[in-house]
Length: 80
Image 1 (cartoon, rainbow, N blue to C red):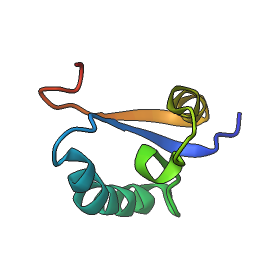
Image 2 (cartoon, rainbow, N blue to C red; image 1 turned 90 degrees about the horizontal axis):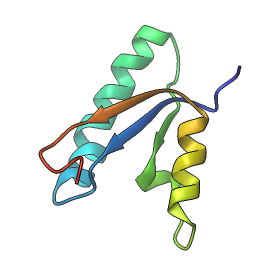
Image 3 (spheres, rainbow, N blue to C red; image 1 turned 180 degrees about the vertical axis):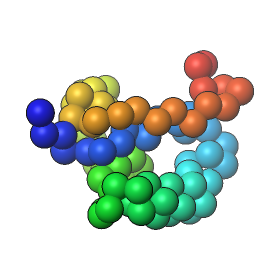
Image 4 (cartoon, rainbow, N blue to C red; image 1 turned 45 degrees about the vertical axis):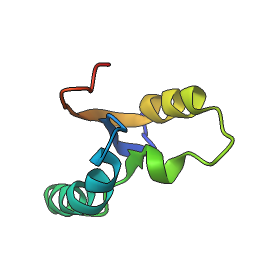
């Protein structure tokens, strides 16, 4: 089965998390994972993938279904 994304990145969109994930975590994660996989990494990241007005549960479900692996960034409020 061919996947559209290598990774579905899941995190709690609260406080500074979205900015930290996009500016700090994602560049390093993509770099090092790309080194291991030997090429560009395709990451489903909700901030850059979901357009305004889209039904986000459907978009997230489709993104998850089309991803090879889920990486969850747990925080105290992740499961809230």
